[in-house]
Image (cartoon, rainbow, N blue to C red; front, side, top):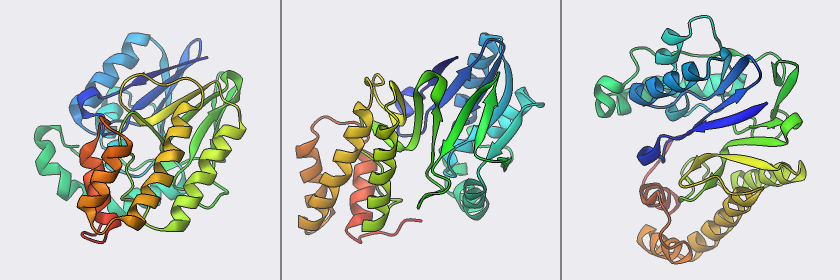
Length: 265
């Protein structure tokens, strides 16, 4: 088995998609944000000449699933699944997310929102190989990752970031950060040879480097949030720790949320 990644490039603040390929079949993890990027993903999959059996949506934010209608049109027989927690997240937020993002995406907005079907159990199968969804029994079942034991690969998705500021606005409590760090330690305990971040700029780093980067960023963000009087001070401090890092808009919004200057849901 092999894995390949579709990264939206200049729009890298949005999630990547990963294709897990066997000899004849493939599974897609996450569906992109815009119709334009979803069409490019369709082209990538068709070029592989593999039969796409399943699309798995790993998280309920729109950059993970807005492209589903484009993918479903291209692969109408493909199963689309997600965990019950992810489905609940999508159901609760999809109308508001489309209201916010639809005008900005314009013709690249989804024509309709596709809600996945529930994943049965905690794994997917590809030509006899298991893709395990890890974390469903943990404190944050809506923030899982995929572990592929046969190739010692983790698809880190929402918990793992590399090469850009980490999106902190969705996790606003000390417990949520502690739970996040626990998830990252769980990834390391598996001793993966490859970890695919859910968001990254540049190349995918070796081994668990992206896991260590994310954990360090969370700790530094918490330390600097406690010291900063406002978001401006927090942004300045984080840029000093991480000069030249991409995704500054993520930092700016996360800092405002962390310092109570704006709400985020």
